[in-house]
Length: 531
Image (cartoon, rainbow, N blue to C red):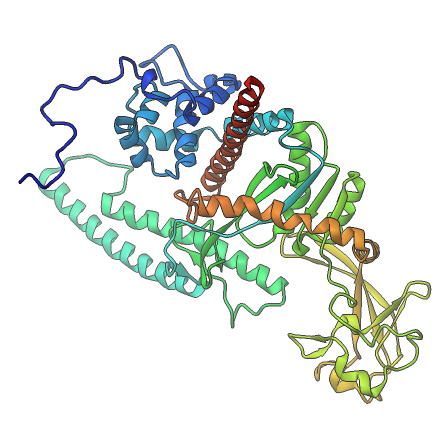
């Protein structure tokens, strides 16, 4: 009894395949539309990078870019896997027109054409705008974390780097002494009479490691300096620099814990969700990308968006003022005393003391456990502050300091002269404070107050709700569907290029789905019309 299923094809049997490679791909396969879209783009800038007067004829950059973008669409990021698919998958074979491209060529191409890739990204986004599936009306910005190509525990503090450098210095000196001794013995025996400017291989390796550690030490010292500017003591909480990819930063992961990460940024249109600007930063200062993103959008598409939405990290004074100057209607969450809950400091007459019964409800600054700045009320007409006890904090001096990004900030300092006799002194002043409590007001305070009044309106809150879906959906799709949870490349510039490839592929994927939807609707209408 022949119980088991028979093989449909005998391995030795002659089979008849489609007469052409083109016939093997269905007419409605998405690879055909992807190829059509890319054929319609301008590749002049890419072609200019090739020298057609020497060497073998190169593969056209459109073919190379198509393979990488289609691979990302199919969740394939590895150049080795792409090399395999080009030999074994019919759709990849069709796309590359039968070319077998090795992984080294793919990898080199992927990192070489950053400026040209920016133009391709712009062209594809422009196509979406022309089709009307994207609109330059409202845009939403956000950032996420993606792990760097660096082990989670392969990080060092300044102290650790200095210790390793000391060990390497000793090792280098010892090896150099041995090499010099061996050279003298060889000269006495053979009298070669040769000199070399190159270090022996083992010494060159140690020297290269020394240079890498010195660069890492410079970065970790700069990070410690930035921490001091932010009020963090690097002695107790020192910065750490990843040793494999020093450009990355140790940051909290979205999934929990800490690891070397980059912070990719994206600005998407609210209507269709297409990414109109992409960037990568090394730290958490997402607010520094807000205005540059608007400038790149104008440069790429000819105008600013009408409105921009961003989370609370972007609601800084320079950003709010910069958006106003550009005529962009800006929406972002901004913390105020009212938004954090009932605040007894906001009383009708700030010269009167807050009731003793309301003292426990006054805002507290978490780090000092003293009254927060929001427990004080500013009187613009008199240019003074009032403390919870109704005492006056008068202008003392104008000061400035550098922030974590190296920008100079100016602010006025106001100080109270009646703290010594105050019954709430222990709740308000540091034990080390000898001159009374001070409060500062920076140059953008008025700008933030006007913006806070705008964001308190119901229509502004309703508008701001659009941000969540528009800004966060691209990251969800890229991480879950395209499987980008760790970068393949190292170094900020290469990571930026990898992120731009990913965002370009994301926009292409949306265009392909939109085309499939339009094709289905057309087929349905044609069928209904024939009845």
